[in-house]
Length: 152
Ligand code: RB5
Image (cartoon, rainbow, N blue to C red; front, side):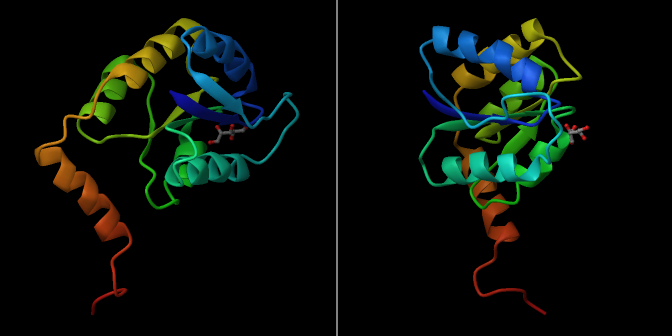
């Protein structure tokens, strides 16, 4: 799978640990940074990853910050992106099965490497169920970006 990965200083250390693991699982990984623990603002990294996923330049995106929360909020501003912040594998699994999540946000200060890999392996392998969930996922987009603008 082609995966684009970004982080801020709060997610840098965990990102550095997961990248070789993802590559060892034969994923094609693009790392857009950051490359140190120097403090940066997370929204541009979220935007870059989100836009790449929305444009089909990557199959999935992974974002890491201190909590995963700010990255998730920012990534979800891009149409076509369904970003989730999760801290355990069950939520990761359900976000794939029912919500077709395409960006995963992790908190580098919340979880350790083993939990991160358990979450990632679940999230990367779990299929979307489709069916009744397909319509609901489409509705997220339709209600967030209605054609013809706001109704009165
Ligand atoms: C940085 O201190 C922290 O606020 C950031 O990494 C992230 O957790 C924001 O949601």
